[in-house]
View (cartoon, rainbow, N blue to C red):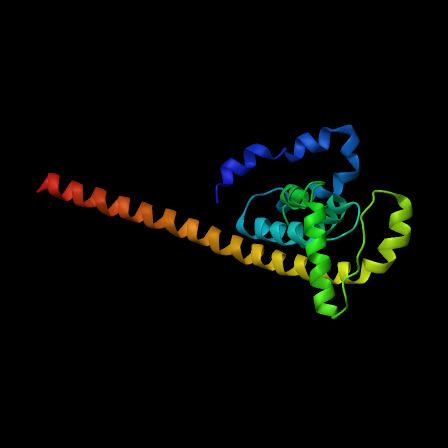
Length: 182
């Protein structure tokens, strides 16, 4: 993975620590793996971030940071991945997870019109919460596991390819030095 490229975009722990509005996050600095970019912490961050992105709950970023802290995952990546479900992508994603939930629970789909009001949330969400929650949890687990395994494979492949390039470069230099010395 492009470790140095990713680190350019992350704030350093010192920058976050010195920000007065983020003092509540001081326990995050006791565990350095929460900020490091390595295969394990990034793979865990993708697992956590993708899972939390599919949760139909408010405060997804806080939930992702909390889980990342206890899973020893990279916090900035976990929190950033939650924005897969942003105001533009949320309706189609949650409709798809609702449909998945109705299929899994073998329940009929309800006809409803989404309105951004408290009245709609209190009345309609009670009717669709169960399939939405089941579908969202399932999608979160599936996409989280796929991204975890994908990051593990991609990272190992990248390291192997770099190692192989260095090995071929050494062999080529050794062959060139033998040819010039003979």
